[in-house]
Length: 574
Image 1 (cartoon, rainbow, N blue to C red):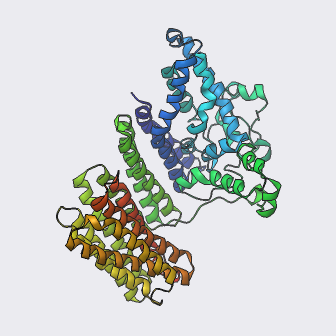
Image 2 (image 1 turned 60 degrees about the vertical axis):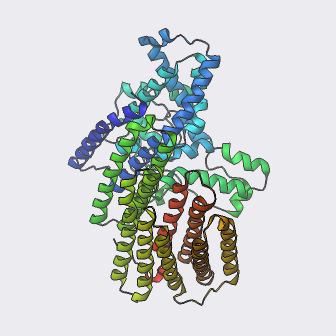
């Protein structure tokens, strides 16, 4: 049985214990759960597990290579005795202590570990909140075990034991446990570790044993109420940004630092360290625990139910993927990783009010349409591909009804989507390329009319020249692969899509707002998608062509649908 399958089998136990903790807290009037925070934490756990399908191969591969080359005592008979297992577990816990400590004392390790600390709640769902990037550098701390000769199988088992043990210590409902607290990582000891209180900061790193902290001076007993989270609050339910935020902050500071030594030191100094010149030019307010606010954007009851249902569906998808992941080709695993991560991101965006519920369904259908096309699941692809733009049409119609604005703008957008949907349907079947091309040509004419609303024709002559130039270059590449009929049809299409992109870019240069920029970027992705499609069909077959063609196509449509209506009218609707 693979580690992924063990996690799948353990998942019902995790959720049963979470339900018990919630019920206990509710009954005692001390509920420690919020739906949005719990979904975010468990989503990060799901993302960590599906990405671990790849990072585990990286970590275990390095461990196995070192073990095979330089192991000093590779006696499997010894390591699989009961005392060998105990020694291996204690050895692992010792190495884990130093990795965990590095995760708080060195910025690049904190960038990975911060994910586990971002929640401002402390409950069993917080235990599932895990990093997706920790294995990239974390393997370094387990090299001593490989050198000592701990077999890879034994290493993998003690990793799971140590990880599973740490689940139960993430609760506020278990008090101090006397002698147990002196030897083992306990709920009381670990609450201190998650707190941002001044004298709790960077304490109690032990995984199973707390004696490492007592030996190496990092122990602190719980003696005041813990305040949870990080000193630079995430303030987001986005699982992708959760993993990237500190890396991005470090990269920006490294870029801005004038001294080359500082550019490197930023990554290895303690978290929060910044060069003097960067601090002076880009100051940050000092941390004040008395002004710390809990991130909790408002949610309607409908959105709460929607988020919960979406979460359950995604959980089933992740469990199914993990069960078969180790037997899937790397390409299939990567495609499903992308589709599932997209779904988790979209649900998080809805919970914080960045996307409507219909937009989430649009994005999920688009991700599944792309994945099923790449993997050759033809019948499923024929379901999800029209469904994606179907949700787009519903979203635009519902938004237009809600704001009751001038109907022409939304009619143009609806017409563009309707003809795009027709083009999608034609292109799913052999022999319908020309009808599909004509459908998209008409769709782009409606998009041109849409972007013309309130603007001059092609306000930016530079944009017009650039898009027509790119189109001409693309047509030259394709020319020899086209028959006479297609040469005329493709020429007309290239001109129209270049004009569409020029109108969108020109509109952005005039309005200079985020929404019009989003539309312009979407138009650019439309040109890219069509260029990839044409290159693959008429010039040179591309590897994983459907991934690039459909991926860029759906990015284009989603950006246009989401941003096309002027910001002043962009009220939210489901």
